[in-house]
Length: 318
Ligand code: SAM
Ligand code: SF4
Image (spheres, helix red, strand yellow):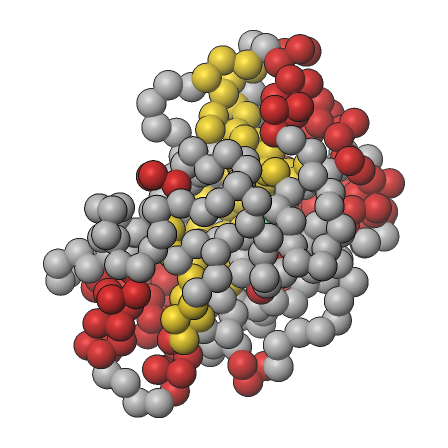
């Protein structure tokens, strides 16, 4: 491997790359893509060959971990093959999914996945339907996928975005995580341009859990991302991700690649590097590497507390 070219101007090592492979998704989560059916044309998506070329370039620069996300990554045909190829590069390989198509895929991908994060916002089919826009009978499919993933031995985490609609189900979700012995992370809603405001503060979520189960901060490093982790008195690991208190920016290790091939330095702040253009216009690996190396130096130290996303989350990948 060449020398690490992913150190930004604040000395942070940006070794973790999140790749959104599609903006499409079967769900219409009210805090994410909503009911839009306005998606990128297929020709605008990076091909798997392009994603793999970039993964090799990024590995050479210092990337150690790639998370495949979306939209819903499992709606992209043959994404299992992409996961295998990324894993074969020697990279820590993980997936974030809504769980809908996961169960049947597990036998194909369990040997190449280092971890999977599965979104679950509700313990009742009714609230699942309200938030995801999917018929309530599909709630069981997601729950079964989480159980199957856990049983397969892949390290699993649950992701829950908290909005007014599921606030009452926080403790039921914590109990579900307890029964399966898997960590659960509560994510603060990030306001999307022209979207309604669904926000519920992480402080209020923490208070609900603390009042009923107690919460003790886990000391030392746990996880590889922006969550702060705690343990309830009955042993559930609970993480909180709060965008409005960006305490985690000083240890940020992330870069993002959008489905249309733009590199982003920050989830919340715009400013993108058009890698698809470079890939499709004959730039050598070395030139692309140099462009990325210059770009990462521009990563800001922190985002503001009230940023509003200019893209919907399904076209960034969370
Ligand atoms: N479809 C997959 C899923 O839902 O897990 C992967 C893509 S989704 C965009 C990635 C993560 O972003 C999910 O955990 C989702 O809950 C979260 N997310 C989506 N919109 C959000 C928003 N407005 N604020 C905070 N988190 C959001
Ligand atoms: Fe789809 Fe995930 Fe967005 Fe929900 S959060 S609409 S499952 S991409």
